[in-house]
Amino acid sequence: MPPIFKLHSRNVMTIIERQRDNLVNIRIVWIGFCLLFTSAQISAGAIYKNGFDVTDAIIEVSEILPGGPPRDGIPAIDEPQFVHADDADFLKPEDRILGVERNGIVKAYPINILNWHEIVNDRFRQEPIVITFCPLCGTGMAFEATVRGNPLMFGVSGLLYNSDVLLYDRASESLWSQIMKQSISGKHQGDRLRHVPLQHTNWADWSDRYPDTLVLSDDTGFSRDYQRSPYRGYDKSRDLYFPVEFRSKGYHPKERVLGLEVNGTYKAYPFIELSKTDGLIKENLAGQQLTVKYDIQNQTANAYDLADNLLPSTTAFWFAWYAFHPQTEIFRATDPEIK
Image (cartoon, rainbow, N blue to C red; front, side, top):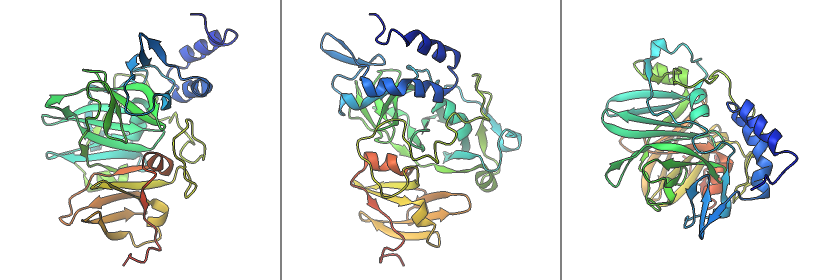
């Protein structure tokens, strides 16, 4: 089939080939394409995007958009290497990390690395755990990677839904929504991933509390400049790269929120609201007693049960949380229930 844009397609491909490591440039080139047509391939009644069959997807097929890079154009890390905290000299105190404590093991995953890979297929002892990060939504989430008794390995599909990364498992090529925590197409359609608690904080805070932590090494096997963010300035801008189904003007689109799901009830705790408190909020959410702790210095928020166990939560940009949960409750510092 001849190229749709005859005058420019060769130039576009040249730009992509020359700047394949610059994710922002790739995405900018393809923004117009995403808005002009769906990029769906239709064959014998089936609909494919980036090579994935989305014919019977549980979400609107038209809302599944190509993010720019092809399938695995953003390479997942399948054999992660780790260094001890004292050897993590590539990290600065203010660098953001995702921290996981599980099965007696403590690990930190630098956002500087996740920006370029988005998925780390890891193990905590013998338990498969997948670490995921979507730079466009600001969402770092970890999941048990065993579904229906089978361990899965995940890759980056190159597709987005509501601006959020769609993972795919390599065994069945089912697509999975990170924020929905659910497969949206393929053999595993409807299956859910079990959310693993993690903390989204900075390196100074994490290494101070967990001095024996392991750290994902920047020796990933890929040639990337991990000291440079391909999304520089994005978290301060009001602009979105891709459309979302629901928008709210209540807060800056990139305002960070702690998102909780308890017994089918969703609630967002905007950091700007938490900053107006003493940093300790006790709540009864959908019948569960919990405490939200906010650290203004390190810009991190977490939720705990009555036994002080860390609860699964999602730190996200406000626009992303609202796009998936327009019915969300919202914590406001002026709530009369706050003691």
